[in-house]
Amino acid sequence: MEPLWSGALLCTFGFLLVGVHGTHYRMYGYPIHNSYIYPPLVHGSAVLPIPRPGILASPPHTGNVRPKPETKTLQVNQPTDNACKSRPKDLVFIIDSSRSVRPQEFEKVKIFLSDMVDTLDIGERATRVAVVNYASTVKTEFFLKTYFNKAAMKKAISFINPLSTGTMTGLAIQTALDEAFTVESGARPATFKIAKVAIIVTDGRPQDRVQDVAAKARASGIEIYAVGVDRADIQSLKLMASAPLDDHVFYVETYGVIEKLTSMFKESLCGVDFCAPGRHDCEHICTATATSYQCKCRDGYMLNPDKKTCSRIDVCALGRHDCEHICVATATSYQCKCRDGYSLNPDKKTCSQEARSAVQIEDPCKCESLVAFQGQVNTYIESLTTKLDELTRKLQVYEGKRN
Image 1 (cartoon, rainbow, N blue to C red):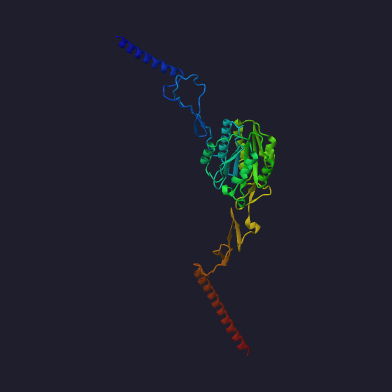
Image 2 (tube, rainbow, N blue to C red):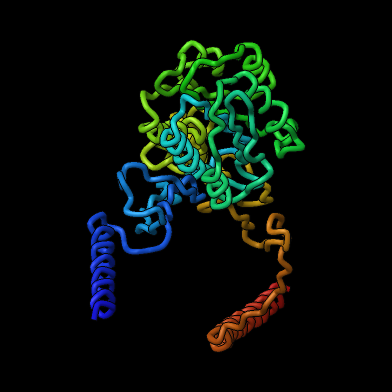
């Protein structure tokens, strides 16, 4: 009997142990598994495992469990349809990823870059973009010739990782000059007259001299915008940026609001559309210039002295025609016509005299009238002849008596 009782006690103890063991897991919210797998941290689009300290102060056993993964995604705004259509640019972002930029702050910088890409007219013949990442070392993440569509470019931005060391801003600008703004890397030749722009984003004081290298970059034709965040040194920003400084130096208190600079940069990079509805008072055509606009008129009209309204051009009155005879003004131009007796030649300008044939027109009433008139004339002539004969005879008798 003792072996039977011993076996029964062992089975009962085993079932109780399993029940308690499962209950211990459920108390901590973990399902029963054989191994730990840590929840993911989403960094860009790369999923990296990280430990979870403090979740279980004393794990129930030395095995591992698989918790339900926590989903964290990088918030990237969807593309917009308000990309500017300004002149093409070769644009290079120079971004600070030193140790002072925390990982979550660097994600904000990447969102800012992504939003900026959305506002630009990206393309091989439009605006080209490159990104230079720097700290103590410098890394060109991609060149001006690498991506010509927004989707691929934004995906590449999401993969950028911080370098997490010092702040060598001068070295970053020099690297941009040597690598990013070269024809070999995708920059258009100077003969193309494509604007070259650099946007520097930093939160600290440069650990090298930036004044000389920034001056050299500006002298080569590169327009520099300097964006300072939080602990950035304002004086250093002014040494880097192009003039006027009010238009090229920006500052935000935290990376959390850096995205608000997107609209400001859109206006700076794209320029104001002076010919947008409501921005001009041209009657016919508005033509935007670098700083304002000009009014023009449609064909057949001329600009009035007020430089805004238009009046129809009377080409005939002004003598601006080549008609041989008569000029007739139309809505948009003029037409030539000929005087009576002439016809317009195929050139629609000169005239030729018409050949006219004499046409005998019969009067249906003149025959009877003429016959009646001739009868009356004949009768009168006969009467005169008779009288003349009688006078002649009387004259002859008178002459005979005298003799």
